[in-house]
Image 1 (cartoon, rainbow, N blue to C red):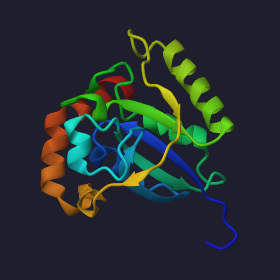
Image 2: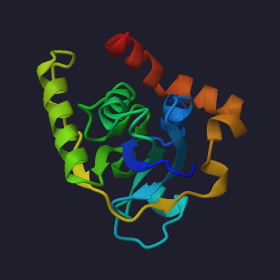
Image 3: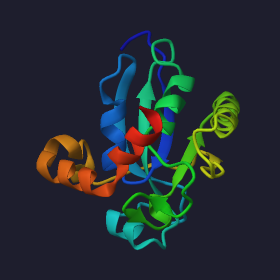
Image 4: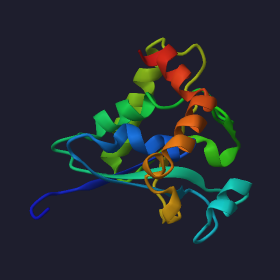
Length: 176
């Protein structure tokens, strides 16, 4: 770790359980933490966020080495995990806490996110507008430990939930 410069990226893509695994095993990704961001409640719990009145979104905070995995590659991978045209949630998970967002930490991240969003909108992949907002990063609150790496800890439940969600079918229809 000595001598390496890591940066942070935070993305809301609906259920944070489904947003960890796609980023996990890439060279240059150091850590991924599930948590909450963007709301008005300090130290929210999963129940606070799930109720929908905390203002927070479920997010993943990614610590990465930009020399090995640049931010624009993170953005590309992020877009391929979500329905960027759905402002009401993601797949089976509905409500504000499951909506999408890109949270930027620097002006360069904001600029790259805006370019990426414009490019996606112009690509013709979707016939509806891209509604995922690009917002300044706020305080990140780590989710409870049982949410961390949920896809490993509760493999059967995770796989059943993901299969039922419609996420994989959507990804297959739009990105493969």
